Image (tube, rainbow, N blue to C red; front, side):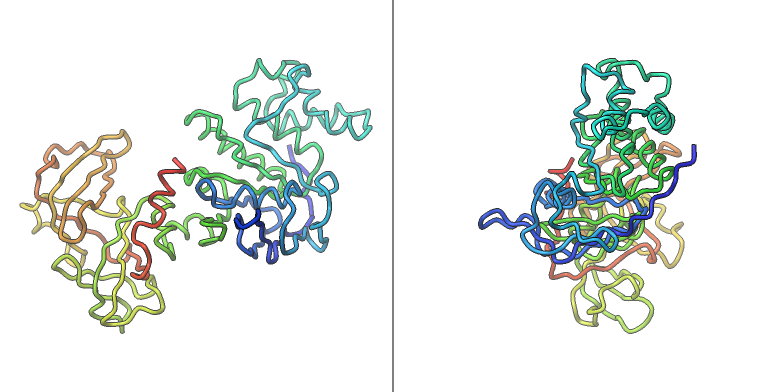
Length: 384
């Protein structure tokens, strides 16, 4: 089914903040959500993401700033006069109504009597046409979630706000629904703003992700760019896992930066380092666990030239199906993590084994060493 694409303009927050007495939930925020995009606000509990969503919805009044939808200032409008709809984690379906009537509720409330065509279109969109006469309790959690989305979309909002809508689902169903929501958003073409604490969820669905921390946007961009090029230790640690190695900058004049760390020299691209990186300074070299390969120390001669190398000893290994996770103790870090894809089972990399960690220098990134190296780690645990 092809849906008509809406033209409502971008959502723009300018200087928007929210305080409760002496507590600031959202710092003054400038944010643009492009029209027709799938936009995610990602962060741990208490970071301000839900408060930001509720200010867009009109459920919370902004302490400062303005909110525009296209050219229209909606800052002072009550929720029912804003062209937005919200889907919450609790779907709030009416248990006494069947699925078709749940979806039709908004239209009937506005006095629209002929609703069948629109309801049928929504049932087709969420692929629930054969379940129209069932009651909510007869549906799975994922099906109920799709009904809630259809009930919101039938009102033709210019923006759909989703507040942790998949939080009540089990892992397998949640992953299925991530793909379903992305399909629906692509099909209807309206702006989705999705609040979540789940990094994988945000990266799977969103075109753009705003990582929030302490009421501020820590970094904003496409999921792949945030993951590959984090600008802060918080983003590097919160969005996936990063090994951060402290080192001294030996040279920073060319296309590569040379770092002394763990008794050896490591290189990384100058373009992936802070502008302030200079010879004689300090830096945090970051490398993702899946970018690292492990080779037994006895076979170190077989490692290709030009790769960064760190010697170490395996202290732990965990087989988790798709990969094996290793923890390696080395002079460069007490607990470097390595993810090895489960292509061929290797029996030699057991705790106590002497190994060499090696990776392509182009896969590393640099961060300002004045930051807290553990920023985001606690937040990531809280969000899990």
